[in-house]
Amino acid sequence: MSSTPREEPAGRKRVTLMKLAERKALGEPIVMITAYDHPSALVVEEAGVDLVLVGDSAANTVLGYTSTVPVTVDELLMLTRAVRRGLATPLLVGDLPFGSYEASDEQAILTAQRFVKEAGCDAIKLEGGGTSVQRARAIVSAGIPVMGHVGLTPQTATSLGGYRAQGRTAARASQVMQDAMELQDAGCFSVVFEAIPFEVTDLVMQQMEIVVIGIGAGPSTDGQVLVLHDLLAVHTGHVAKFVRQFADVRAEMLRGVEAYADAVRSREFPAPEHGYSIPPEELERLRARPPRRGAPAYDW
Ligand code: KIV
Image (cartoon, rainbow, N blue to C red; front, side, top):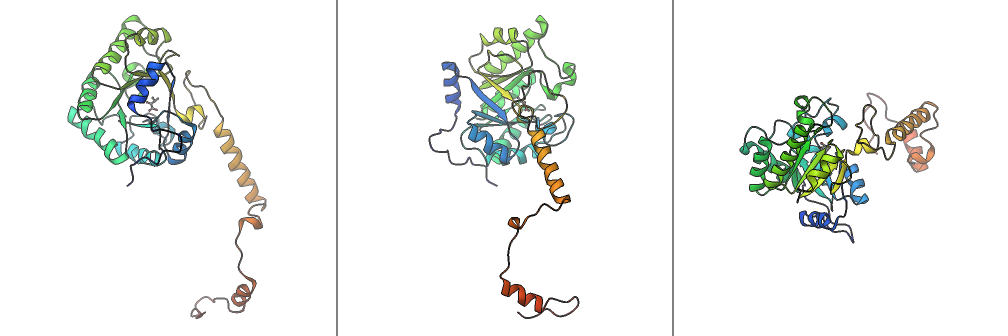
């Protein structure tokens, strides 16, 4: 099992926590994206993103679950290892799934260690404030960098009233802000703000010394993250308001598969150039003595 990053491509340096902090200080936008497999990892590597998250959104995007709740540590570890094998430069963040860190600090540390040891993650992400703050603190004390996640936290969407924007009343906004600041104080190197009003982001940004990555949280965060399958439009179905589709990959995949099916059905594919040849004299020998069912094999 390989969990080491690939060699850095010429002219590109590995992204470190220090580099991200420098970017924030210089006001240079940070690009984060999700990936769930090796070919996507190669693409996001080549595109030069800064951070790659193997999100528990894999539950919906690639595993066919209807929420992020059922995805297991083992399922995410397998995907994360595939991504690790494709990355050299971006910082790789593993996502602790629902039920893998909430019960105790010990559980949280053991799960985080699996993502580092078994999948080569540089950091892990966990969701929410409250007890998650203490879990984050414990994982940081165990030497593993932690990214928090506040606002809309899909693992607990049911108790948040569904997949909807958070912090739209003064009381709820103040809770989101409090969670973000507590995660910062717990030692997180970064926090994701998901689906909160821009004005609330602007307010809390004044207190944030660590790197803040937004998704549906406006332009004032230090960077942005989107789910790869959303921004490429790999799937059909509902997409959140904060998603912009930068390509229509599903349409292109469908076009390709339909064209293949048509070509097979019309016998246009395969053409001679898609096959292999046998020297004519070998073919002659074979034709002269073809194997017969039930007869002993020839000794060529
Ligand atoms: O799982 C995920 O993809 C995420 C991002 C939306 C931040 O948590």
